[in-house]
Length: 70
Image 1 (cartoon, one colour):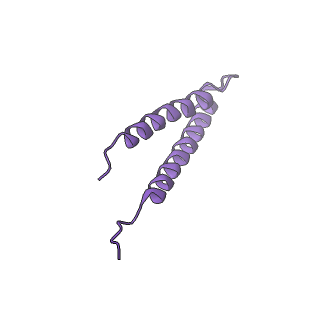
Image 2 (cartoon, helix red, strand yellow):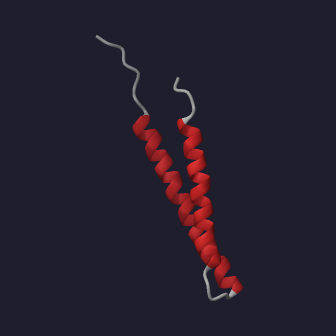
């Protein structure tokens, strides 16, 4: 019999996806809240905060993939 180490890639990617969705949802909610406080016609924060969150999360994803496997 072979002793195989359990492959946790599925849980790893599910955790990353969940983190991504939560970060984007919080960015949209914070942007909407900030836009309601400013009263501007263009939803600057609703557009910019999720974009910033995407850049940050992509950076984290790249860092995660560059980690050496144990």
